[in-house]
Length: 187
Ligand code: IMP
Ligand code: MG
Image (tube, rainbow, N blue to C red; front, side, top):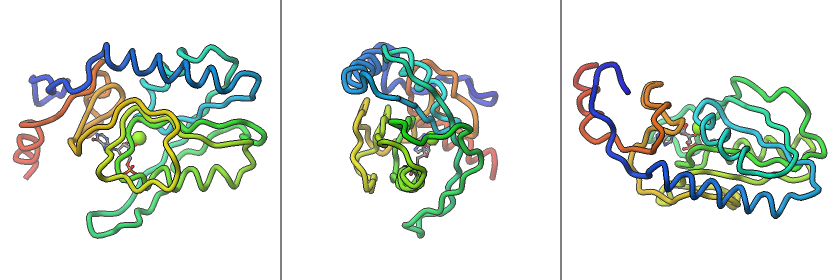
């Protein structure tokens, strides 16, 4: 799963738990968006696995698009500056948008994105996130569809990475010993 470490990350949320949560979220969205022009917008790259499963769990016509952002800042900056690397391609005007996130940590990314989306004329904007780090999040908007609340652990898998690896794990795992190992190797 990582070229320098053969140990699989400790499972935190299993494939079965994820499937169950995604089905529930898909049903909720299906019930609430019937007859509406629905568009899912995923934030790359972490959303790519979750969004493909969520889209298939929604039994309605919909379109998809993607945006890629990066955030700057460190422990001393509380605001978090977010920059758009790749914008979505088609208009969101008059669409009911659901922003799809793999994980909400501080919430800075989504605070920026929701505000930015709302300036571009959508009919509505809501948020779907697989994971939420409850302790840290300072989101200015409600999380309308959520999979799980988790502790402040660094997680990987199901789209989420550590230095670009582990995205293809089919479960969500925690890096315990590995982070120490990697930081020793790079120092
Ligand atoms: P936020 O702006 O602090 O909410 O950060 C959200 C983004 O940081 C997510 O979309 C992820 O890309 C990344 N991120 C936050 N926590 C983790 C984690 O535990 N594992 C992997 N990526 C994470
Ligand atoms: Mg992300």
